[in-house]
Length: 199
Image (cartoon, rainbow, N blue to C red; front, side):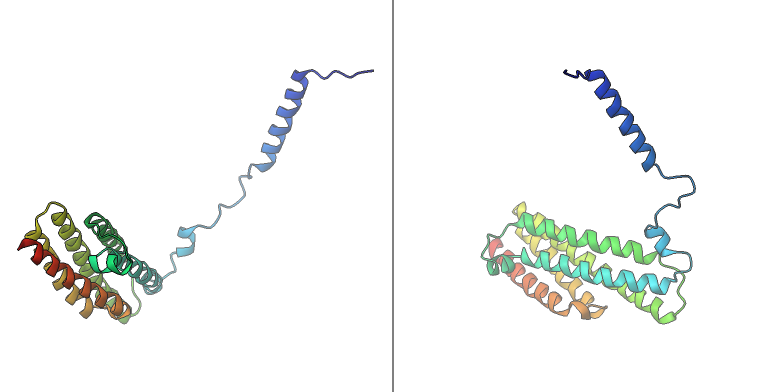
């Protein structure tokens, strides 16, 4: 004797099982929401602690973005045995600028500080981030001018980036000393190449 199951019955049974399973997964009204970044920050967290946490992340992210930019200068490209492209230098410089901008915006809002030394350190680091923004912005503009075959303008922007680099070295750049030195070498080489292209 054969048993014939109608497709409608199978579908109805399947639908009932899905609805039942979904009902089990719905959280009750009394279930507290999961803790997120806002909960972790808490009102009790001081500006000192927020700054120290943000500073560590900023140092790491700025270092990574600086290194990426250095890899795309003519010197960095030659070291990697890769072709130099002004568009890649511009893109990596804009990435560094965006990173520095984001941390500058976040840090300037930190308050209140309990320790004057921490607030002073934050203010000094804001100066450093401003210098990094200038280096990156001028480098991006230099690469953009180079792409337009305006080598004199590219040289001027690169020289402005080189001047901003001196400020970065004097305002909290100790943690990035080697990267800043490499940036200086890259900028000096770039400036010379733009001079040669002008001639």
